[in-house]
Image 1 (cartoon, rainbow, N blue to C red):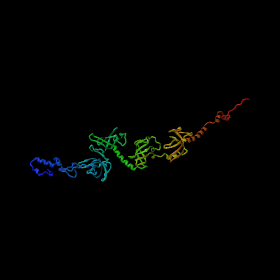
Image 2: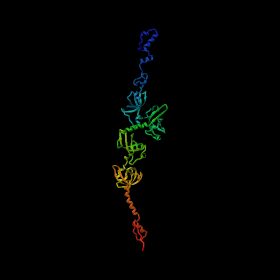
Image 3: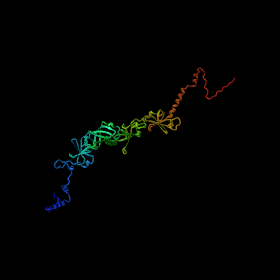
Image 4: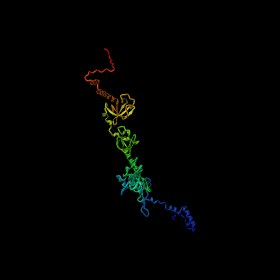
Length: 442
């Protein structure tokens, strides 16, 4: 017994056992023997918290468990401090050092640099070696059931497809990918991915039920975020970019030009009037577009397609000079007249006063959309892209020719009379409206 009990010697030398027990109880202050021993020896640290640098009795040092900063979050940022034996050692600002396989860098043709910081994901802890197990964020994990965790990036083969999603085989482990996790946007043809090797992220692990759920959408969204940031930093008006049509609406189409969706308005699709955008584009089409405007603050981009096509107005003055009579197709009726297409992309206006040789109160009285009419070009304004047309003048120009043709083709009265009685003297034609009076008698 330690001297900390401070039992007087007079009591110990006494002959009464009850007196001794009473004295010991008073000295212990009501504590049990077990509690007293704990106070004497002091608190002992758990074995898991022992520093590996301090040897223990009877064996090699035991590893300390990772500090809270290393295990509190799966996402870690660390600095490479050493590379050896196909492993990369990382300083994660904790009591323990992290380690990540070198293959997770080299599989992406990336060489780790000592002193460089990278993003990692916590995957486990090696008590024996005192090392925090890390995974390069975005690297493919080839582990077994025990090594798979939520957030791990894995690579698998698509074995089958159904309405619910995809069946993916990952290192001989059967996983399921819901249809909503296959792509960023709705994918109606999941069978197109069967037989392909894809990269995906683990989103659910249930070892007891042998259930593994993965997502390809998470990987695509991460890549899209990287592409989007890069695209916004490079976008400028006048650029020509290749994109993929993501959706088509009545007012235009949205085109993905590298993580950024730009609007291709219906008016910028073609030099001709577009009534139905779906007749020009459909989702999935790859197109070359021109950047017409960039709003970094509102994150809006306007695109153009017709700007990359030849402008039919560039030769309109030569193709349709003033005074020319040509055929045109009525496209639209307005209160002030009708628009007529001379060639694809080139329209002219027939004012209501020039629609016919008679008075017209509404364009619908003489023409309708789709009618083909003869028009005369009155004026061409290339700057404003306007052409004035006249159907009435085209009709007037054609009228004298028609009358002259009728006069030359119709036989005269004298010719008819001569032909009727050859050799007979021609009688002068009677004057119209003159009454001949017959006189009788001797």
